[in-house]
Length: 472
Image (cartoon, rainbow, N blue to C red; front, side, top):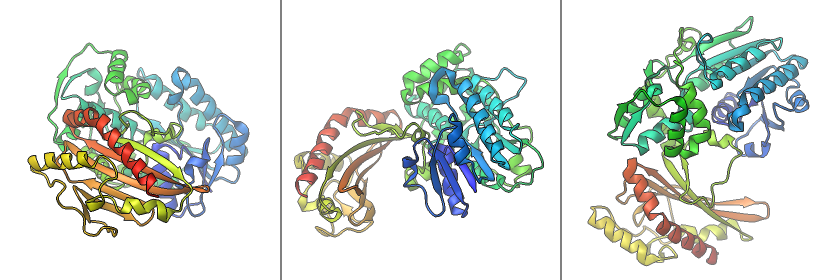
């Protein structure tokens, strides 16, 4: 039996998928196990608990041979160091009582003798506490993780997307050795059966050494963005954190803590990915390509913000930012059936129209024609039937599941990419119909387009959803 903590988080969520795919028997410890219902399958079970609640840890660790410790307390403000130490002490105590054989802990790179940031210092202290639990503790120390949803990567690319000219502080030039999330997950899975006779610290990283500025430049290259960096020596980590909060407010609280860690070089001395796990890790360019490809494939399997109490995004003005995407969601509940709820959705477009403000839809189509786009003149193949690849005016059906899901990809001229998605799900005795607008902006032009037109989009999408509801 494997216990997985942090399964609602970024790394933990992807590790859960990998463990289930490998047929492992997994038990997930979470403060909110209901958030894991849609992610668990097979022999995976969930248990409610907290690393600061000893009794819940005793129950969760009963019968466990290997435990993954993937929790941190950076969300809890300035006292996160004491909270992390206390949680590790209680976890070690419960593991010792239950005779757990191995704890695998994901920590952070950084020289112990150097002036470590509070974040890295706390990570190292957690590793030391866990190593004294009585069994074998494998501490894996990694630098920034490159993957869609990783907070460090999202913070860096948010800066690149929003700032054509960046005044870059000293930490941008700090050497680092990032690892792709796919390589990290492979290492974590292989760690379960890695022969070890005692507690061990292993350093893991990608194939290349670079800097945070180097990651920014490679990301800009792959997104076809021209970015200029002006280095200055005056921005302290504190001032950098304040600057970060202005530019990328969604990452402000955690980001200010991470910025201080970026002052510390995070280079591996001996890369265990190659020497111990016998893998050929990805380089920076490959890691970024994989991150962007993953977003295109599944809209990102997990995100760092999933761990923040699974906050609802409905009703947020302008939508919520996830990576390069802005997501705007609306929904309603009805007592009807899935079939009846989805009937007006599958009829959208063509002669049926969009149920609200059709004149504005046609005006947008006319503007698109003037810009060299496809406009609204294509209509649709059949008034009621749909299949993936079908055209609906200036949209194309990207995914279709009868009575459950319709995702449309925009083919009009845009400074980015856009999707419009409709879902119908049973919630108790009702059916919830959810409309989601997704915009993947490219640079400042894309952000200006979305936020300038958001009042109009909000007006149209709200009316369209009411139109769907009135036809059920």
